[in-house]
Image 1: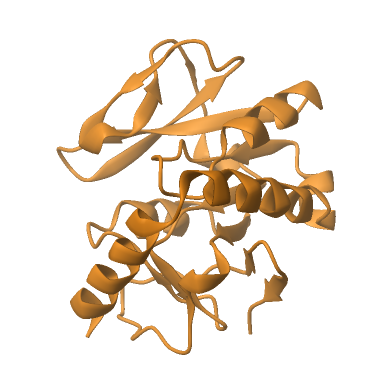
Image 2 (image 1 turned 30 degrees about the vertical axis):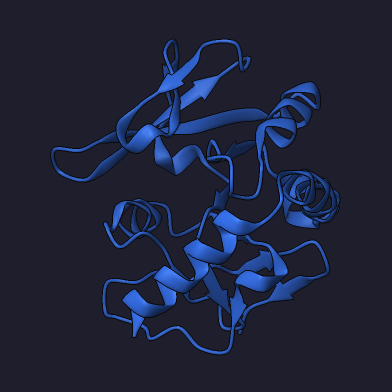
Length: 185
């Protein structure tokens, strides 16, 4: 079930027109930056987006311009860990594991310092359950920072009725799309 849903969602995302991705990402950014939790957050963990995901580059830059402390994850394949890297600009990113942009120069961030985590996903449901790529990196990380607010970013078509939940899965508190903010139950 999860694999079939993942394949369908990735195909939909891949066929999404580039200009729509940019337009919808801008609308998602406005909703995200309008959240009380975002305004109050001092340290925010973003993800660096692949081309068919909700784009975060402008979000990262705007958060930096607002004086927020911003981190991006660096994938450590051995042990399936994400190391959090504080960045001060977007100039020095290079493709890391799985082709995801990662900072070359950074200051490590203690996960406990993070107030808000912007979480990528292949799909989300109304309960905050998330379908990722199935490798468990984010679930493992989110368990290390239970006091942070977890906000999933998704295009509206990535919202589904139900994602089968497994024991190791960690749900998000909110999901932001171009059309709405979903307060997860």
